[in-house]
Image 1: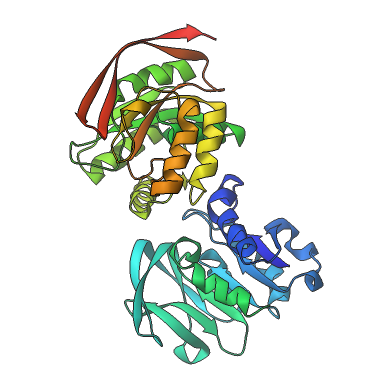
Image 2: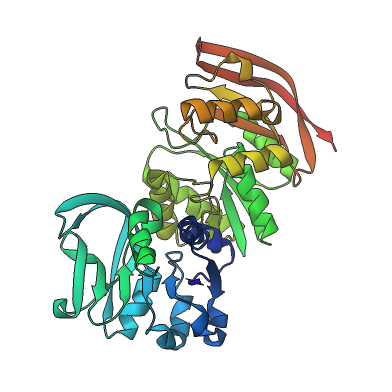
Length: 176
Length: 220
């Protein structure tokens, strides 16, 4: 089972930020379960093979209250999207800078040397020392899709559920 | 939370009002933007009758012309001040151009931006709204949609639209401007709209507009 951790404060935002992820998870044959933040410290970790932490609205930072509750998930493969990535960054010793990136932007996948589009809706960018992360994609030299070395935590600053389903498919594929 | 809804009078913006009310939001205002002639962002065949829809629903409406992006932000700020709203709901479905514009404007106006139709399956949406709303097709602008659909109820021609979607890959929700709709009744409408007179303007076999010339409200 894949746990989809819903970061939005308002239930209506689940339709925008959480349900598209659930669709992707189910499309590739996994069972997905939406987990609300207030239930995070009660879940039975053994039931879950991996987690995807959703993004949320630009004005929403309520998820930061639950930072501590994410700690016990860190031994599992986790894919953090936008707000989800911010959570992972803070837990793994990274930091956040205030910077808005909004809209469809051209990003570069470094290893493949290919450009593609990604949809951003963020006001904070997670940053690390470069020796702590394995960078897969950049936007104007800012790492926007990367893995934290020696962990199974992936951070996407953009929303892959819009243009980059393949990144989620790959993540889910590695779990099978 | 008190919210405003970006409202064009079509099926998607009415579906957003429906969802807002279902989630328990207080919809304090509808915001109808009348575009510049060259703006493809907003929908406008029967813009003047949107005020009648607002009356039917019983929610105030702000209707303004938008020449620039800054105009759009000013309109949102006006709605925020006058109607004490904290957020805006939009019917953005898949267009990141549209979504980005709405997100940026809401950010600058200090408003939450909710997009409950975002990335939703268009076929599911159109089937749902055809069931719960009374919708008229008021514009057809793409091959192979034709005159036979104009002025008809969406529920009557839904099968044809879905057939054309399967065969020709037209967007079933009309998201690319293939067709436009006008809602004349919905569960949250306090009165229904009755169209008394209309005119069909045909630019070509696949570009037809149904212009409402006269309409009134009727008790339900």
